Amino acid sequence: MTKKYEDRMTSAVKHLESEYASVRAGRANPGVLDKVTVDYYGVATPINQVATVSVTEARTLSIQPWDRSLLKAVVKAIQMSDVGINPIDDGISIRLVFPAPTEERRKALAKDVSKMAEEAKVAVRNVRRDAMDKFKAAKKAGELTEDDQKKLEEKMQKITDKFIKEIDEVAAKKTKEVMEL
Image (cartoon, rainbow, N blue to C red):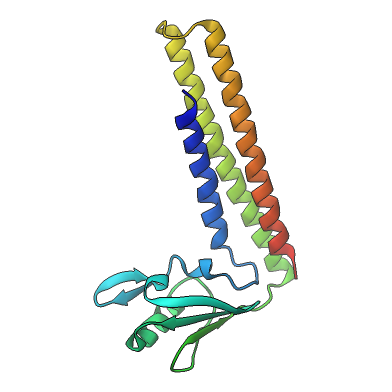
């Protein structure tokens, strides 16, 4: 009975991790381009579906379009996006050089990381609340005994605690990554 709620909590953590992938921490990460799309024959297509994106050095991403005619479109898409880095086009591939963030920028990113973690925790707690409401309704309808309701509520609380701890660990890891020079 708690499985579907556990799955919803898992998806909240997965969403948090995907959000963290787009946080630019000074290190080159192909995830920053996940939301950037290129006009590919009239269709908005993600960059990773029209090019090879790789990390060549710690702070450099290399983008090599499979179709060279897309080079200018990829450069334009990156410039129009919120990546905040000017692409370098050498005629064959595109390079993105990530500058080291300032101390102030790293603190702002760490704050954003904490905010995202808090939003994920709220999502997990909302799932717990939905589950508790369902358990109470089932008891009221006579589908559960009071003891069964208490056991399910305790189990749900343990599952919630596990996911909150996991969110804290993921957030701490990302904060550490953001604060590194």
